[in-house]
Length: 456
Image (cartoon, rainbow, N blue to C red; front, side, top):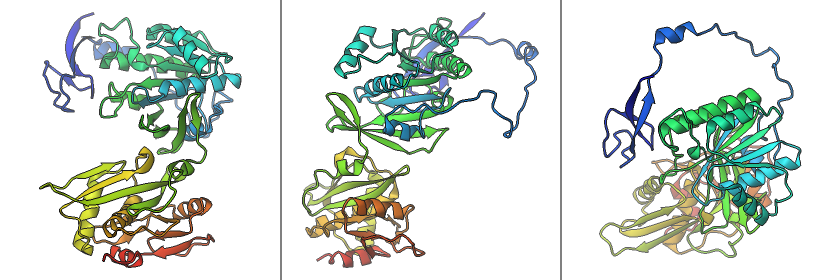
């Protein structure tokens, strides 16, 4: 079979006819790699080998009975996957090096083995003895799981086909897998795509759940072709700051459950321990009220989560004042400071602004606008915000404070943790939920500043 040469970008998977130093699609430098690609048969020949597809309806019973979710025993992991692992599903877990992906999956495999689930852990980066050493350190040496070191995707796929009793297979990592039929080296776009396809086809035919570990780029995206994320059923991202002791497993894509769910774990000497109430963890070190701090009542997936937002506004000696943001969008902070200064007269120009979400948590929802604004106002006025209070609400460019979803859940979580007052936008309709919190409504920033005691 004839072969031709193509040049693939290892960051985004785009194809170029010749080598270039910088990818035109993703602007990555030195990411173009030459690969030998076998030419495909002509369309005329492939059309003759096709067959008619038989269709079924939604009312028709499944040909395979008993496809129930596998509960891992790690409730935080089950929450993110939508209630457990679906047989025959494929999960992709990405995260920074050393964040704890292999530790989490080894603990997961051992937990499932205790439930009489046939589990195999295949590593392409470590030897079997190294995996055993980590298992002994975590106190998992009594677990009956299969361990192997392999990188040939064809061998692994054949093992799946010949093992009908196999229920879960973990591949660590997909970037180390290769197919002998391809001339390119492991980790290239063609190898990752073809190896994943071979393993996925074998796993789905055998109803074996498959978990891939994926490397990430410096931007946090999963390395390899973008199509890899479309091939799998769920994409999970394991994130966290090495300077903090907790880790967050976040659902990015899930065909069998809700997205944007999070599971919170704490890294200890005995491995990862799940945190059932993460709000207490993020607020554990909040002992007294300080100017420039506010508690935000947020929602991550279906879970209410309270975190502390810290702001510091200080005079700047630079021509362009600094805007340093950790855990929030810097563009959102720029918009918020412009609204506060233009609409409310809050003196922010010519000052450095530092914003931090305590504990390394990353907030994405716009409901944090009100909490960030309250922290900035408190820092400028040097007056602490009212004790035991929470904030949430979205801010418009007109300085109007708008409603956010799931307000009742936010308030219930705040009351459960001992908070006494909540600052929020005025609701459009009355709620039947009876709470013990004192509610303070503000329709715009001017009303919020008046409630908090003014600027002067």
